[in-house]
Length: 386
Image (tube, rainbow, N blue to C red; front, side):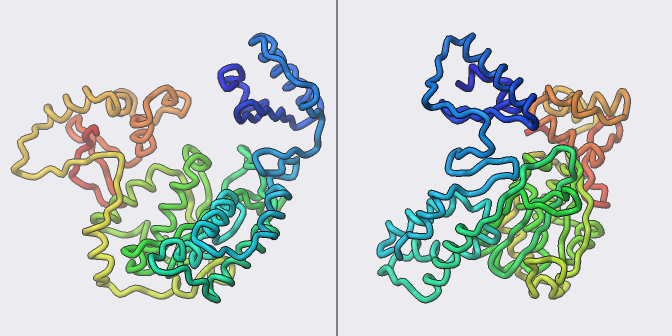
């Protein structure tokens, strides 16, 4: 079915296996999309069962969700199942409950924090010990799913707003858009911190929240400008840090792929802010230093730092870069015109080339060789292909 309707699924319909939902902003557009889909099905000699078809519905049930002109919400049959779910008696019962809840986690703000005691119980090697904390988590999760909000459809003509936050145990974010002077939630994201990450200083946790949240919503944010809001002064550190090293350098390079404006909001205006996120960190933080050595974040772009003993000559580096299929298209643009190509020009290129394109402003030429800058510091590091 995906082959038959290829090219139509992004504008006229939604598709999952043999289920087709035809959409439209107006009645006329809806009729036109129905006609286009029927033409494709007829051309492929496919038949429909009239008994299974429903036309001109204001809302439909699809993969456990209710889809309407208002947005997307959880299906009533699923929320009823959650509401009537008995207290788990075994790890197997608990995992079944969590699997259902996790499917709808995008509707629940701070899902990871709410579900944390239950997840910890599934990992316990000892006897199944249902505590008061587990009971509270169980009931809170059920209530959150029953009363989950309607999530708005993303609008390509509106700016995305990303609110990020970090606490002592987890990070989270809300992706929204302002529609008719009202901020409407599109999706939620949350993640429990690993043991090494819990030792990060507050400032580093806030920066981690920014990086992970942007990566999670990459398909919404990449290639367009958006507003990033945080309740912590880490944004000043991010923009003004003069000697980034290790993990911080990788994070800054990663963020340079995106086009965003940072806005600081007071904790009182930042709904899910934690008091810890406003505590200053000491100038020397052993946890950050240790974490930087052990738990660096991988980056998709390789750099090589030049030293006085390095055998590479400028001509050799330039030759290697021009022969690299990922780097060559960007390097040629820099050499020939100096202007950044549009997204339409770069769209046919490989994902690796697009990643270099996103770092256009951080790449500079010196003796015909590509170098990369990190933050406000120009690193003597040349770009090499992966």
